Amino acid sequence: MTGLAEVISQIKGQQQQDIISIRNFIASNYPDTLRALKMIDLEYTQPKRRKGFSLVKVLSKKHGFIYYARFSHNGKTLPTKFHTHTNDELTAEKYALENKAALVDRYLQRKDRRMFIMLENFYKDRTDIYNLNITERCRREYHGVILNKFIPFLEKQKISCFEQLSATALIKFQDHLLSENIKPQSVNNKMFAVKKVMASMFRKGMIKENPAECVRGVPVCQGDKQARGCYDLDKIKGIFNKRWKDDTSLLLCLLIYATGLRNSEINRIKLEDIISIGGCRFIWIKKSKTLNGVRMVPLHDFVYRKLKIWVEKNCKTPQSPLFDYYRAEVFNSANLCLAMQLGVSSEKLEAENITFYSGRHFWKTMMSCEGLGEDIEEIFMGHKVSGNVAKLYNHRDKQGKKNMVKKAKQVFAILDRCVFKQSRGGLSQRPQGRRGSSPRKTTPKRAKR
Image 1 (cartoon, rainbow, N blue to C red):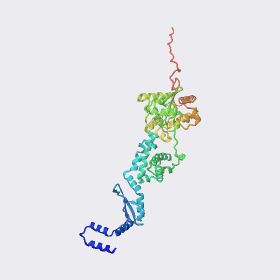
Image 2: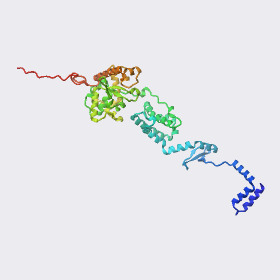
Image 3: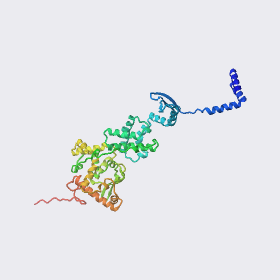
Image 4: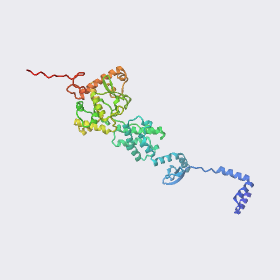
């Protein structure tokens, strides 16, 4: 080893000698020594590896200093530092290595507003499994909740990535809605729009857990529900026989007060849905908000004649809906128009909570008061149907058709008594004179001689 030191010192003095010849001289004359040095070097020297981050010391009053990590993405260093929560270098390095992907992704989400873009477009995407079987009206309402309520709340709370959407954040959103004097039942409806988004994000793997599963609805007390009012039974009689300024409002009010249909069902009525069974006309509701809503609804002749005039004026085809009003303003306008016909002020409408949907409550109240029977809600209103009632009034069965037609005729008789004004010659749906006979011919009397 001493001889090697003397040679090295001699070599250092010869500055003009080539480095390659020096290496060759050492390799040829001292091979064992060179091999031993290489082994020692390999044992104590770890190869450098690309970490993708660097640690930066930042002064801290409590700990003296704290390590922050700076990451690189696609070959570029991100212009922000990430807290490692420690002043131990090995712990900070371990934290940076384990959390690099999540921290960088969170930063990119904040920068390009990825989460907000996804939330804004969720209810526009009709292919999502959680966005298929909802009506256009619900789609617009849910989209409005996300756009006008949920996203502004997230921005205020500085929540900008999927990982920050926790159950606590959703509960705070509930409290935020309640603080805006929104009733508990309405808060639950708005939360339903958010929960559908959370379920879809969990299914697609955007979040590891669905925080909405831990969030329960706000308890609804009886005092929180505002009872929906409706007109007295004798208030409506004859109102549809008068002239109205707006034909659309007349027909919409006429339909809900004479059939008890839901607003969404009125929107979907087509001319081909009106069928005749046993001499009575029915509206066949093929699609409704519930499975029990698929049913036959009796259609009075007076209403049918008004519908035919509407079809002729608006050139509707049998395959197209008679109405296509997905805006609530049209139904609100019809409700106000009816109030004007009855001489009821808008203040009274608001005080008694009388809306367009009150026509459905009116129809149910009228049929119950006139003794149509308890099963009226099941066979004609689309509520939950028991097995016996469904079998009794099955329109595909001969006996069921007979029972349904019998009930429908009772409905028509009640409408004639309570809603439609009778003409001098008979009921409002019948022409004057006897059925099946022509008007009696009269001959002038002979003058007396």
